[in-house]
Image (cartoon, rainbow, N blue to C red; front, side, top):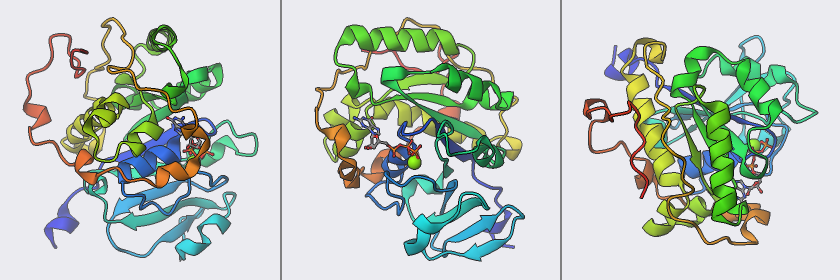
Length: 297
Ligand SMILES: Nc1nc2c(ncn2[C@@H]2O[C@H](COP(=O)(O)OP(=O)(O)OP(=O)(O)O)[C@@H](O)[C@H]2O)c(=O)[nH]1
Ligand SMILES: [Mg+2]
């Protein structure tokens, strides 16, 4: 048996959240170079499971039966009888983790079963919440249904933070959501996915988007999960801190038209941004408060 075959599966990261919260934009950002065949405007897709490799795509039906899939036909795959679509890509991030882009769970046309079917595969969740209506009751209710072992290793992402136009609103939203979700996530990050995607090689813009801190936390989490038996997190302590909230570290300049242009996401996020960190996260001394969050400038 080869080393690859002997190796246990990679941690599986589920991208969840309500309709249009930015899950597919996030998948594209993480995969980078606009390589994902899933258009951000695509709706009614079943869960899309991205793994590393060059194998041909396939669908898995509700009975677990695989069928080959021509990616040109992706938009025609039926949600009702497909457990998930499996797509292989040679993207850096997929060397460390699998990603599952789930359909929005509050879409009135989307049965909750669709994402419940996929969630048991997940070792961690990135929950995307639209910042201008962050952490609605429906989101809290959906999160309460999920297995508790996910809580200490999952990340809450407040997307479209660029839509909050001043520091007061940003601080207020972040403070409220942190208070309401305390103990339920490893950490909460405000982010503008659009700005992160548009940042390209502009390091300052990447930092200002909020994506840098979030991606670091994701990589740390995945490395820790990868070291656990079965990638399961029930031995990890909850890391979410109780430190005072602060808005985006560097306030991005709003770009009024960006959010209205899905095609903007065809821009590239350099894969180097999601490479395995040089330092060994597990060997770092824990922060005084037990959290990974670095002091915010
Ligand atoms: N301004 C702004 N727009 C964003 C951001 N994230 C996503 N969008 C836009 O929001 C729209 C919806 O994003 P998607 O990534 O398709 O959202 P989704 O959660 O995958 O949606 P469903 O799969 O339909 O539930 C797209 O037009 C994105 O360009 C962000 O951080 N800022
Ligand atoms: Mg989507």
